[in-house]
Amino acid sequence: MSPHLIPPSPQSPPARGGEYLVYMSENHKIARAATTIGMGTFLSRILGFLRDMVIAHFFGAGMAADAFFVAFRLPNLWRRLVGEGSLTISFIPVYTEYLTQRSEEETREVTHIAFTIAGVILLILTILGILFSPILIRIIAPGWFTQYPEKFGLTVTLNQIIFPYLFFMGLFALCMGILNSYRHFFAPAIAPIFLNISIIVSVFLFYHAFKIPVMTLALGVLAGGVIQFFFQIPFLWKRGITFRFNFNFRNPAIKRIGLLMIPGLIGTGVYQLNVFIDTIFASFLPSGSVSYLFFADRLMEFPLGIFAIAIGMASLPSLSGLASQGKMEELKETLSFTFRLVSFISVPAMVGLIALKTPIISLLFQRGLFDYSATEKTAIALLFYSVGLWAIAGSRTIVPAFYSLQDTWTPLKIALICLAANVLLNGIFIFFTPLKHAGLALATSLSSTLNLILLFWKLNSKFGKIDMRKNIHSLLRNVLCSLPMGLAAYLICSIGNWSATGNVAAKVLLLFVGIIIGVGIYFVASYWMKNEEMLFLLKMLRRQKRGQATF
Image (cartoon, rainbow, N blue to C red):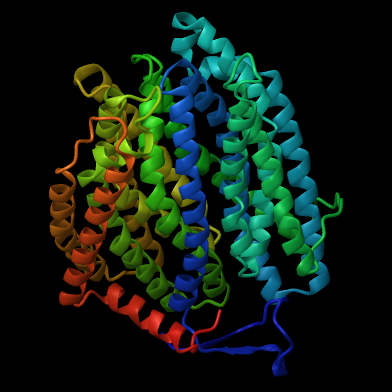
């Protein structure tokens, strides 16, 4: 991709003519930004696993853990709906346009109005969530209301304690949208580590001080949300960004953001509703089913968060910039690149999770009240979740292309179709097969695959013909390189006794050797097959070492 001119961002130093010659292609900028986001997410996920290990040790996969996971799911859903979901994806394209094409005063006014509206809406939702918590929990876990009244009451109490987390995380999402528009990704990416730290610290400090120990988890979540928001403030101040009340809701930018948020809110809600549908079905299954799905989903979210979500977040400002300049051919090239880059990582991650599902779960969670039976049931859920990992990762890179053109309706329509498919598949697998909770994971994977196919189909009609052969060939090549990797890792780790609790050092060593050798085989195979994404990453690393790359 050839160099091109873009207007300077407000954080850039003055330049003659008000423009910069940018010698790094959008591909390199996305890769560098994704690396920053990915590293922050990696640290967060590592601490997240430590957090989950603490939860598994102290609470197992029984009533208390089930109650916490469901109680946390509601405010976490709202956070994704009005925060990281619709607010961020509708805010960044419009805000990027103001940064590059409008005055500093106009941009500052948009910031203040967005803060005012977000604060008011989040406060109302938080109060309503606390007041109507019993009704919400009865909707999301109807089986508990009649079969497990004690668990139901505990879940309501935990939910009411956690719900203010929504307010602070919604404001955090607004901060993230602003900083990402400025091409600053570090602070939002690193902030989630504070949630995990606060939960861990809360459990260790207050577990024996509470009559109901699981309350420590709820307090840890609330504290984590507060810290994450305030951590962004210094980075905003550094760029001259402050939050003030401004009730000029007729501002044209705010109207555009609001119009984009409506379908974005529904679309994100549909996606998150899949999780709630799984929970509703799981509430009729044996106790522990919710926890098995939660732990399996956490493991699958690890590669998704580090790579797929990171690349998707990094690509949105770049795609928005190209769209605002009318550079559609470059936008298509950049989009194709991000998909291939994600598949280069997500496919081996999928194969690796399938091959090493039991060793990973045994090492991370099998201790205290989490026994080998829980490991096996979590492993089967992880197997069926992993089957769709490549499709979920691919979708995370395609959707930003629609948002960059300020089209939030197309992803919504597709999401509604996939929601219906997920509900249908859930019913089939739960009531007509012996899969039980694993069937819910398989339904998620199949509906996610359908989602990716439909997104690509609509993308072709919207952007014109996209060279799908290159993307498909890259996908198949990654599969071929991943198979020997997965086989080698599986054979190496099969030496260990993963059913026994303990022997942590031996398990760590064996799993480490299996992963390292597997990764080595994948990279050697990719290099031998002249994988373009592999060669791109190597070239970027060499440029970075020589100090030729800029960020």
